[in-house]
Length: 110
Image (tube, rainbow, N blue to C red; front, side, top):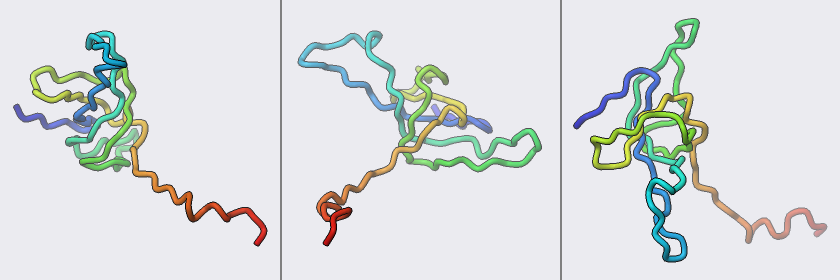
């Protein structure tokens, strides 16, 4: 099956929630819904009230955080696919580089 989201819609491959806690298997219905996923594709643009096209703050392949209770699950897909509105994408996850070894001397008198 091929899915092409319309304007303002984003297709995500949602991350799987942890299935085990301390060796106990938790039923899927009892698990917290994953709120992170990878952007697969999206509708090109969504016009605002003035008719201007708005660019998205994410691109294909980005890992994003979405509102957990919004969107529609695509049950026909073999992966955990969810179709959400672009406004339900609330953050883009990025790599955080820590330079703790270099920052140890900051703030001290030399």
